[in-house]
Image 1 (cartoon, rainbow, N blue to C red):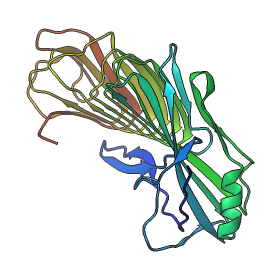
Image 2 (spheres, rainbow, N blue to C red; image 1 turned 180 degrees about the horizontal axis):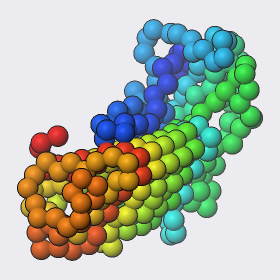
Image 3 (spheres, rainbow, N blue to C red; image 1 turned 135 degrees about the horizontal axis):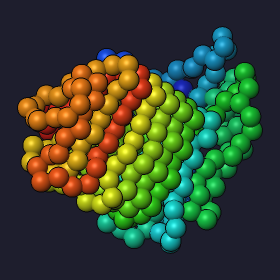
Length: 290
C-alpha cells in the first residue's frame, strides 16, 4: 500500500553551518526513500500552507513524499550516499535490521509535473548501498533525496554527502564520513569514528564516563568545532585550530597553546577523542552548560 501527499512543501535540510567564531547554526535536512511503503512524516511533509520555491527566477511547485523500507542487517559496511543534494541522518537502535526512510522532493512548473518527475527517481538499497538515481537537475525541474536510517548499534557505516549535512547518533561500530558542503553532528558515539567535512562545522556530544572503542578523529576545513563532554569523562582529548581560537568552559591542566590547541588527559585517560579545524573556532564545554 502506498500513499503520497503533495504540498508546496517546505524543504528542510540537515545542514550544519558553523561560523568562524565557533557558533553553530543548525538547520535540518530532507529525508526520503524508495520502498514498498510510503508514509508521511513531519520531517518530510510541508505544512497546510502551500507555497512555491524560486529557482533562478522560476516559480516551481514542490512535491514531497516519504518512503520507507526495512532491510536485513546482513554483514559488511552500510553505505549511504546523499549524492548531489541530500543529507543523511543515521541512528543506532536495538533491532537486528535496517530501516531506511527517504524523503523525495521534486520541483517543477506544476504539481502534476513535479509528481511525474518524482516518479522517475529510484532509490537503490541493494548490497548495503543506499543512494538515489534520477534525471539531471535543470532550470525547470530539480530533485533531492535525504535519508534517515536506523541501524543496529554495532553496525559499520560509511556516509557521504555533497550538499547536505550528516548526523549520527548512538552508533558503536566503525563510522566513516565525508561531507563537502554540510555540517556534521555526532552524538553518543563509540567504536571507531573517522571523517571530515570541507564547508561545515562539527558538533560532538560525548556520553557516559569514557569512550568505548578505538576513538574519534574528525576534521573540518571551514567551520567551527563544538564539543560537549560529561564532567566525569575519561579520555585523551585533543583539539586545535589554525585560524581561530580555542575556548574551554571548565578548568583543566593543558599542554600546548591554549588559544590555538589543546591536548589533555581527562580523568584516568583512555581512547583519543580528536576534533580539529583549519578555519574556525573551538569550544569545549561540560554537559548541562550549553
